[in-house]
Image (tube, rainbow, N blue to C red; front, side, top):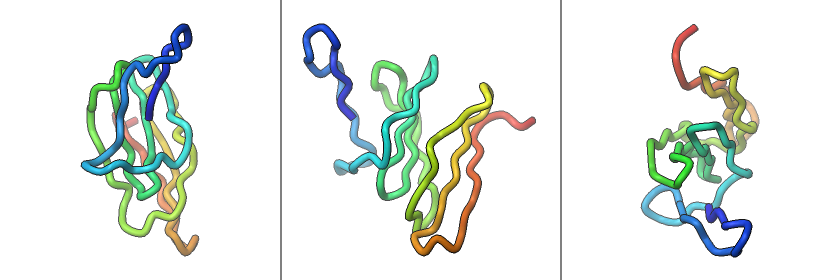
Length: 97
């Protein structure tokens, strides 16, 4: 992930989840205090708005696809689907209801 300054076009910061560069699965999800990215190998990462690392969460073995990240204002949600498309699991992150 490489956000650019709209005025100059220069990189503001750079982030790649994990120790090696991992391609992102979809565009980042932005909130007031976080940037969330999902890598193609099934890792959800949360960054600060200025690119600082907060945490990473592997979504489980054999994740083939994920939904976009959604929120209800308190929790984050996404659907993780197995590579074969036979298994789906809802991932919810945040405070309990």
